Length: 372
Image (cartoon, rainbow, N blue to C red; front, side, top):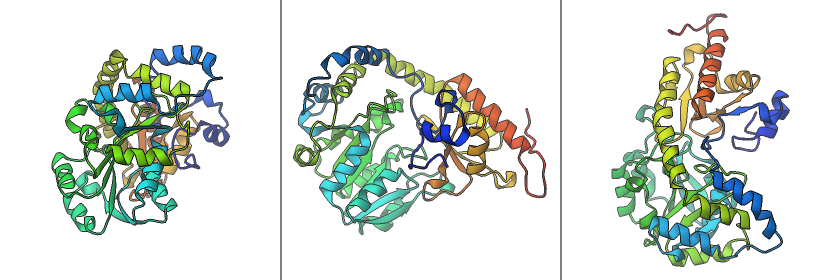
C-alpha cells in the first residue's frame, strides 16, 4: 500500500514496493502543480546556503508583509507555518473543540488533529448522488451539536468548492469555522470564492492556506493562516520557535511576486483538466466534477477493478495514483489523480486503457471493450 503514512507522493515507499528508482515514477498521487517550482526557487536555493549559519526571522515579517499586501489583510492577522499541516494541528490545539464536525470524505489531518486533543467527531456525509457537494441539510443535522466545523474549501479528495449559499449559511450561524483553502490558488476567480479577507476581521472564521501545492514546493513546507489578530497571537504563543526556516521565508516572498507563473498555471489547468476528465470518462470511469487540479473517479462495478488493483498494476509501469478508498466515505473503487502535463496525462490514459482491457471481469476472464 503506497499510503503507508497516510498521504500520496511517497516515492520511497513506491521504490520499495515496485523496485523502480524514484526518478522513474510519474506521480499522479500528489497534487502538485507540474509547472513548478517557479524559476526563482532555484535561484534562492542556489544562493541561500550563504546565510544558513544565521537564524531565520522568528516573526516571518517579510513574508507576512507580502501576504498582507497580496490579500489585503492586516499582517497581525497572519501566522506563517511549516506547511498547512502544522497550522491544522496548531489551530485545533488553540481552540480545543469538544465536538468537531467534519465532512467525509476529507483530508485525514483534520481528524488526526482532533484526536490528538481527545475531541469527538461528528460526520457530515458528502454523498456521491449529490456529486459530493456539501449539502445544507446535512450541515443542519450536526451544527447544533458541534463547537467547531472543519471543512475543505475546495475539499480534498473530491475537489469541490463549498457552494456560496452554504457558505453564507455557515457564516450567519456564528459557529466557529475553519476553512482549509489549500487548493484555492488553482481557482480561476479565486477572489470570488475565498473567505480569507473576511477571516482577518472575524472571531468565528479561520482560513488556512498552503503554498506547497500551487508553487510545487512540498519539500520546503510552507503555509499560512488568517484569523482575528487575538487568535493569531494565541496560536503564535503555542507555535514552535523558528518553525519556518530561512529558505522557506525567502521562497515564499519570491513566488508571491511571480505573476506570470500564476497566469501560466491557470492557463494550463483551464485546458488540461477538462481534457483529462473527458478522457477518463470515455473509458467508462465515473469522474467527479472538480474545481481544482485533481480528479476523483471510480471504476464501474462491472469491471471488477478496485483502486488497490489499479495502483498495483500501474505502479509496476511506473505510474502512481492515490487509492482513495482510504478516505472515510469512499469505497474500494475510488482513485484520485492529479492533473499533470499533457504527455503525462496521455501516459495515464493509455495505461488505464490497457489494464481495463486486460483485467478480469465478473463472469470470467475477459476484457472490457471501450470505443476508440
